[in-house]
Length: 142
Image (cartoon, rainbow, N blue to C red; front, side, top):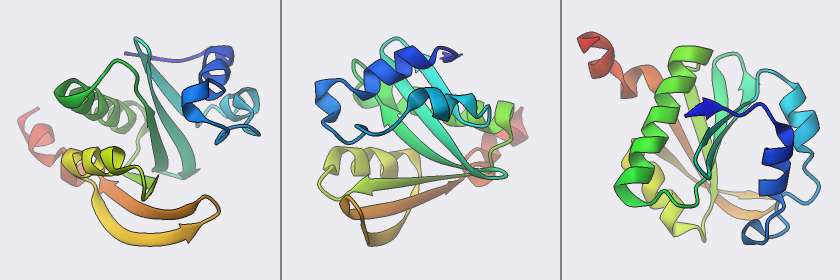
């Protein structure tokens, strides 16, 4: 897994039909110009970490061929990497209520739900993960 450096790869993925028009007005070039924003690439899957405030990122996963256990492991590896290489401490997620599979996977990863809120895209569930808590056993064992 590498950090994506080419905004064109990200831009093209954001405008593919399976994502609908959700990212229609999003400009990957401007977003990636901020070095604090991170995109990890593994095969055809992306892990997107948007910088919010120091040590806090919002995560978005755009996986294609990675599913089930493989997707879970890739997600955990991305979370480890953002923690260890970019000093992230808290990750949040905001997932549309209709996206049941993503909400389920988010729980499997260890995120905690903070309930449903209304957003500009409709009702969404808010999740957070404290990375130091999530990986505390791994950190102890080195």
